[in-house]
Amino acid sequence: MVAEPNLRQEIIQKLKLSPQMFKAIHILELTLPELRELLEQEFEENPLIEVEDKINNEPAVQEETEDDWSEYFAGERDPNVKELEKRRAYQESLITKPPTLQEELLHQLRLNDISEEEYQIGETIIGNIDDDGYLTVPLEEIARDLHKEIGKVEKILSLIQTFYPPGVGARDLRECLLLQLKRRNGTDPLTLKVVENYFLDLENKRYEKIIKELNITPEELKAVNQHLAKLDPKPGRAVSSERPVYVLPDLILEETEEGNYTVRINNEYLPTIRINQYYLKLLKDAHTPEDAKRYIQEKLSAGEWLIKAIRQRQETILKIAQYIIDFQKEFFVHGKGHLKPLTLAHISEKMGLDESTVSRTVNGKYIETPIGIFELKDFFTKAVKGEDKGVSIDFLKLKISELIKSEDPKHPFSDQEIVDKLKEEGINIARRTVTKYREELNILPSHLRKQKL
Image 1 (cartoon, rainbow, N blue to C red):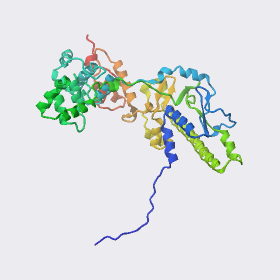
Image 2: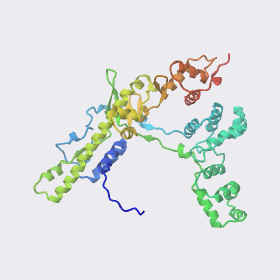
Image 3: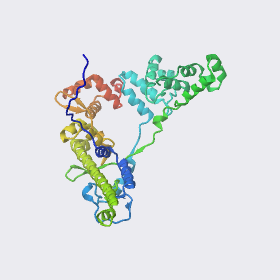
Image 4: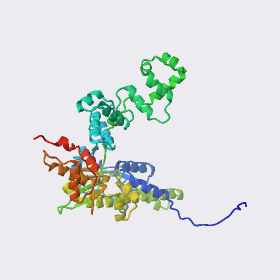
């Protein structure tokens, strides 16, 4: 039976975002420097927009305006100018220092399910890797110093050589290139063979010997050299040469006399944005041509929408930040170990916002506090479930650290004993979890903490 064409109507509900909605979402997720750049771009493209840089206090246009359209913009100029000098004292803390190569490798090492002995070996190996990514001491020396079998040390080095950046942990250039080639998809077998068996000849430009013994053409050898030119002879520089990144806080946290914490928008680094009054007068002028009026009206609508979108961004950031600070107040009173478990889903549910909106709001947004500058997402932490309550990972690390500080140095707690102590407080976790967090705290195992009688 042949199926016949069938025409039917159906109603399908779809969510279609307008270009303005897309732009509003984009504005929400911009960092403060990116927002400044956007405003500069809009100023160049829209003659009805004028901006004034509060830092230099220099208007971008010379026309004076009677109406600054402040009702469209929540970011008013902060009257307390003296605080600008105070915040400039935090200049050094505006620098976020990228991790060193060794810190990055130790972080990757902790992610692997290895024993305490293997972690100790890995830590020693990483400590002997230079900024270029090369292991600088023989494995035999590491094995001798740690009183370990050479096979165990070789096993951990092989693990580290799988870490980022590709080629790290090599003992010479040949091994570095081989490590990178073996991790590349579609690596040419000929290139691999040349590096494995003819590296010295290649290094000394004995090309005729390679061509003759491998029975290849000069063009094929040239292709090998082109493949090798794409590799990094100093892979560690991919991490160790990164420059410090400057951040500008979107928010300022202040403590009131009553001991409460209030958050305000940092308006010093965001230019004031206004609608140019000259063009508004042209719009109302009966002598202005109709096509000019249409153009002015179009740009006016775009400028007003931009101001409203920025105001909405500021209000959303402020609203979410204040909730986070109120929720994590104990952190500012007692320290990092007192961060409560907090997730994007929690804020989404409590504040009636979409989880993606919360994510866009906190990502890349910084807050300046009396104890330093933090990214908003730093206040989010996963929970470790207890018998009748959830505790954060940071709180758990604090408890482990406090237990170890209180132990008898002659009879230190084993990881299992720490598990038992935590269980008495209603916190059930596995021994391997205690081991993991103890290592992240850089605390030695019990047999190495034990003091001799």
